[in-house]
Amino acid sequence: MLSASQSSSATITAEQRGPRPPILLLNDFYYPGVNTLAYPTCKLTKGFEFPVVDGQSAKNVSSDLGDYAFLSAMAYERESINQYTLQEWFGGGVIDEVDYVKKWREESGTQSSPVYFKLFSAPELNSAVVSVRGSETMFDWLSNLHLWFASGVAQCVKWLTPFGWIWTPIIPDLLEVVNSVVESQKLKEQGYYVITSQFVNAVRAGYGGANYTNVFITGASLGGGVAMISGAQTGTPTVSISGPGPLLPRKIFHPPLTVESIDSNVYNFIPERDYIARLGGRPMFYQNAMCIASNNNLFGCHSMWRSFCEINYRCGSNGRPVACRCVERFGYPKPIQNGTRTFEEACAAANETWYDMFPDVPN
Image 1 (tube, one colour):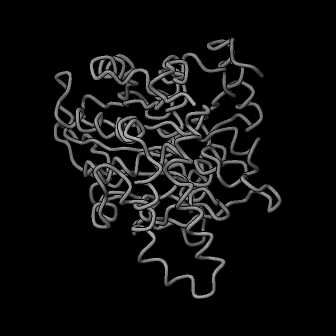
Image 2 (cartoon, rainbow, N blue to C red):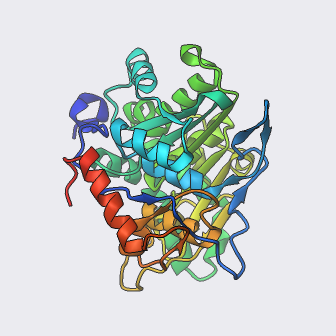
């Protein structure tokens, strides 16, 4: 089997990948949030907040969980699309730093690794978010197996065995022993989290003359799992959407994680019936969430965009746009009209604008 470093074709950039469904965002509709008990983590504080400008000074306020969910999805998109979607979502001031990431990967010799991530910066606020892409290629799925398969097996044994909870304290040690036998030196050096942690440390250290005083990490699915590992290793606030957890396999990483480093730096959004997000154990800071996918849809709740829509609907759009796909694809209620157009008219107009700008995206 080829290692990741032996085949540069394993790396698929957003520009090289096939076209994705259009991202239709509407600014003249909104979700007010649900009247019932909302998720306590709709607003993130204590290290996870984005700074905002108030007059001439910057101050920290609570940040919408939806912003992180949106940026985790944008890790999959090419630069030309992100120029449009970032403008629509944030209203300007946020940049997809493609050249910055490309330069670092070339200088660090990591461009052949299949791990893929983006850096979104807000220069006026000296802030940046590293967004790690989830599973797209065969090597992405192999990385999933490498990092979390043994944890999944151990958890299944624990769940199926009477009094299985007694194994919980020693599972990290058992995984460490197993991993030391099967993991090669090449895998240690080429692990996805190794490269993302190096990049996060470089950004925080001012690589390329940047001076980001606020650095965050996000990602969905595999990207969320890798983001949580790097967040714990580098001490960087991290928001994961449906990511497999780092708690049980914490001793297999290099360097290993501690429970304190995980609980102090990472957050995971975990929809119900999302079996992938339950691998590896939950950090202390997590949010159980609802999922309206049908019960016979086995992996329907493990969906980055479904989670985005869940957050947008239940937490409220809070001045951000709403996405047509939340209604059309995932079955959420129509947002409230804040203009003269119907929802159908607005989505049709957004669809026409999208294909005028990006004619290579399929209907």
